[in-house]
Image (cartoon, rainbow, N blue to C red; front, side, top):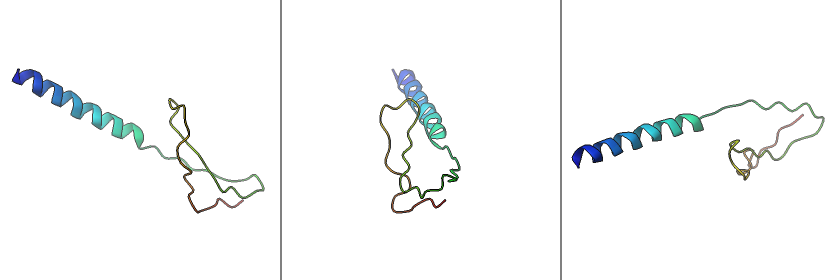
Length: 62
């Protein structure tokens, strides 16, 4: 029983590290539209919903 508990704990910790590594993504957004962008919504590709506006109170000037 102790072996099973240790195996489950190791599996959980390993998967948590993988999930955390996958969530650390970065990108650069350049605005060449001629307009000021005041909202940018992003989400993981597997998500059915958008996340919150990543610009917040900021804007992305042209």
